[in-house]
Length: 283
Image 1 (tube, rainbow, N blue to C red):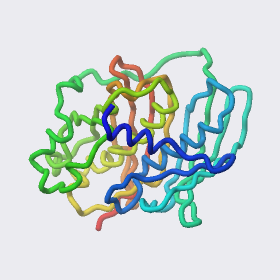
Image 2 (image 1 turned 135 degrees about the horizontal axis):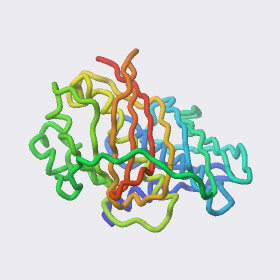
Image 3 (image 1 turned 90 degrees about the vertical axis):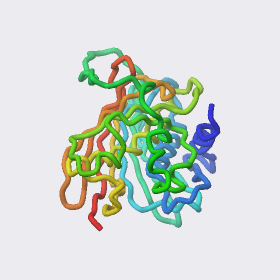
Image 4 (image 1 turned 180 degrees about the vertical axis):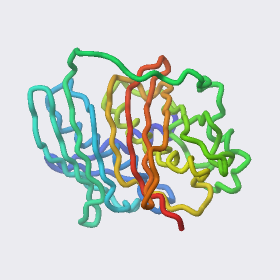
């Protein structure tokens, strides 16, 4: 396990303050605001820690990013145990800084049940992840432009299938595909794997809402920020094995962009569906 991955696991290991109240920290990095995937992952950890019945796993979450998070201040997570039924448990989590809500999520957990099975097919024309360059190799020609961002430790190994944001500028595309996995082996903890994929799901999805316009974050002329984020967990998976994140743009309008993503295991199982809308404002 790499040091950045150890740090991410520590980041997700919240401190219990009181019943239903937890505290999370942010990494010691030069950031203007807290990364949205961090808040979503920590909030899911907080919700999961209030599920008393063993075997209930998260099957969906619906979140809103309300304010920018302050990376220099701890985040307080308050959990509301809305319902515990025979098969499902529902939790609402509010993340608070400076006395104000910065994020809220409602998550639902379900015990495993047999039933009907089907899914959409995984793309068949995707190169193997191990044949693609890692982030540093791919972005090495642009390291001066990226500055500190290029050398920042990365707990998630991401491999772009369809080129990097610099080469795609001016070349409209309907979406993108990205392989990802943790940079090292994880413990056998399904909650941890779900929370890390929640963290990673916010890393590239909103970018794909710009691709039909031939735009990217590299343009420097756009203000992007997550507004809401929804996930459905269909089947079990491991975040330390390669996962294919197939992303496509749904719509851009009113300075907002919407994108959807489907996450597959290497053997073609659809394990997670993600939909996100974010600010996409010209500046």
